[in-house]
Image: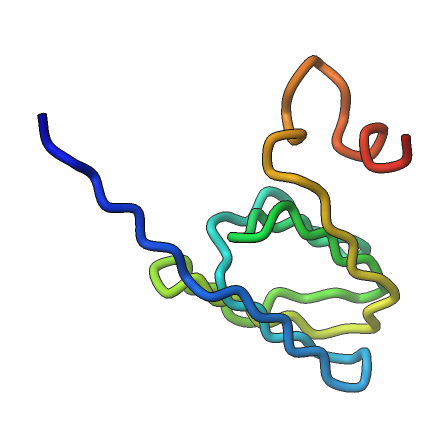
Length: 95
């Protein structure tokens, strides 16, 4: 049996004046629009909310994302709660 090595990237969020964010340790982009960006990171699901949000740079091979716009909030939830038991991510987040 072949052992699979799981590479864990460092997770960092660098927020500059609530107008841009550089995030590392990103595994996947779950969804994004002008008001919300939902990322799967090494430390859990990260939701960024704001106005006029733009994903400027996305490099999943390196696990890096750059986001610009007016960032109002950053919220984490556990990896294991996303997508289970038929409930939406938002309903689980506000329990």
